[in-house]
Length: 353
View 1 (cartoon, helix red, strand yellow):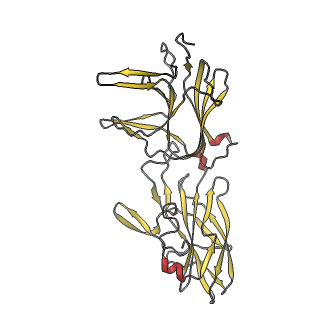
View 2: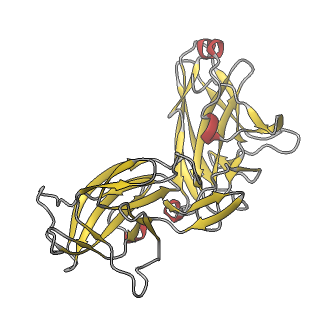
View 3: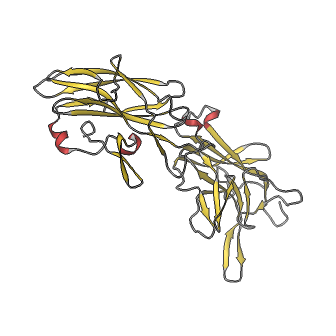
């Protein structure tokens, strides 16, 4: 079904843009064509090509085997059918929350040592015959688009076309270093039509309703935050609200993360693992509108216990969030992003100890 799927053009601003197919990352192999899947006698293995990032290898070589299960030889013209490239990376190396911009800068392909590109008149490619009951091997070399912006996602199709059937193999890749994309993003606060960008992650004291945005520390003359891990009743004119006196880190994930480590670091520099979260998804938005109940951040709250379940003793601490980027190597320090909160005190009795 993947090999025989039909491709769709790009739908943009209410119009269909003819020419290159929509992003491979969006439509995959295409729309299932049941009759074609039934009548096709030739299939391709593997059915897709995952190229990964091009930071070190701008070209990737793959082998695709065409297998003919029919009783007649099939002669194909094999060529490259590129799709639109997804190009919309912000200056801060985060993906745009407004979506991707289509780019016609695409990869190039060679098959069996020859160019598989079609010219402006649709001519080109190479001829390959797959014998009845036999196979034909295609040595495919795909080079990332030289003109496309760095950190863009490219893709397309290895296309084999005969008089009676077509065989399509989708491919996708990432130009540049995938781990250069930011995982932890900032948040836009919107009020009365005015937007203010706040540095995230942020440190939050629920009892005092005080937020320390990233890079913000306790001001001179201001008391260091302290937490007792007790529940208090906060009374206003309308109601009584119960609040848990505990520190929290707010984090917006501008891109998905492979692993997130939430830690408490004591005054001696020893890190205590509070929780570990594998495969954290991207936050749906980076904008908070005042008065909205929807908040574009995850809240990591420390309840005052250590990894063995014991209570953290009184003293000075910081909270730390360590994020391993998507497809990152945990042994590579450059594949981690780290946030450390302002220092605070843990209090265990009325005397402040």
